[in-house]
Length: 265
Image (cartoon, rainbow, N blue to C red; front, side):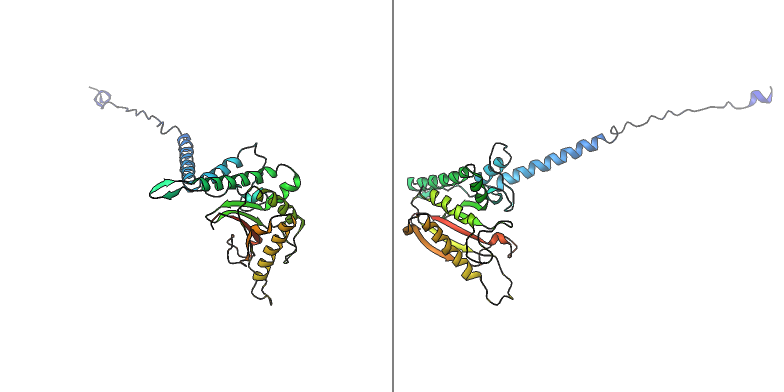
């Protein structure tokens, strides 16, 4: 037998390699990221719905409704009502009487009056450019004390001339608007002045005298518009003790609060 025939056979083993289809490339990652983003947005929306009042939710809905003739922006911006829905307070809660949850007709009537005033103020903004410009300074809210109508400085539009109690024309427009809506109810009125914080190096600290002087000047403006003077229950100045902005020197802290007091307060 030849040497060639005695040689061991050569075996060739071929291994078939199949490329793994894997997860179809990176498309699944994009889909998963979209899913996570949607879930985050959903939980954020649920949190916001739980953390806001019905009136605030109505304000948010109005903001995204193109047909609403009010341009609002956040954080006291240039929009009308300083970035807030004019209905920016909690709805009046029920009154508990002898263990039963009821609401007296007087309270309901008062709540209806407050709501009517808020709606009237909102409607006035569409009547003229002058009113719309003036109402940029207005914010309302309902509190335990009553209906608070806040008039505040904007960075580009103060209510008073410099650091004085001399009103600018916009405040005269606001006073005429307010007297009109105040006639919709007979609730007594409180006028409160507030100022921003000033640097302590000033020789004469103007906060207390200025806040009181501005509140008193507002009373005079309302009186000139024929508001019944007997409705004014008090005129006070709070200096910078009740700030609305974290920055104590923000001009947004310069404001007047006109409160239609609840009957019996």
